[in-house]
Amino acid sequence: MSNVAKRYMITAVALLLLGGGAHAAETGTASDARTLLTIPFEDRDDLLRVMRGNLDQVRQVVEALAKDDFAAVENIADQMSFNKKKGDGLARRGNPGFSAMGVQFHAVNAAALKAAAQSRDRARTLTALGTMLGTCTGCHAAYKLVEWPDNKTYAQPAPVPLKLPEGATWRE
Image (cartoon, rainbow, N blue to C red; front, side, top):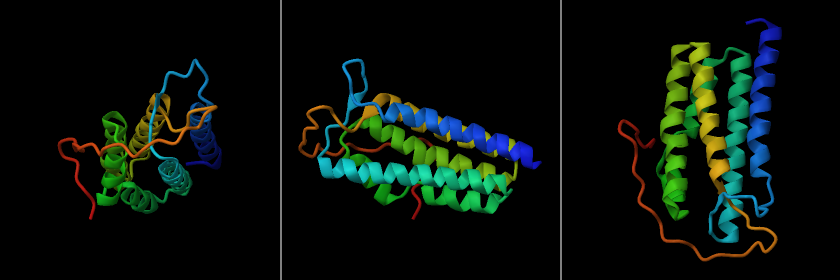
């Protein structure tokens, strides 16, 4: 891949990430129809930390792809994959739809990204990354963490049971 093509790829992914992040930055106006996750303030901080970590891992994937480093993409996708800690965190949020999107991201999308990277097929890997980012933007379009201007503190909701899609597995 030429340097020009790599720059175009990185620019395209950056624009996609910025577009998805804009929705997350909304302040909860009356026109904001997203579902508020009514979780304790401390839990919101933790969830935002985790999501920022996911975004940083996506950045690392883009950098690795720009270097044709498919082994690094595999490693990052494995780190993003589903495990007990992630499952417990998703269940604790108390919203089945939100939890299902988290399972989709970590159990399905991360596994597809890893398999695509193993194939060393750039188009397949970029498609898997795009699908993963689609889950991110879909979740940010459906849910919000903070209610403005009140920014209320909520009690911890009851955990929800997680259902893994057929073929998805827990990473040990």
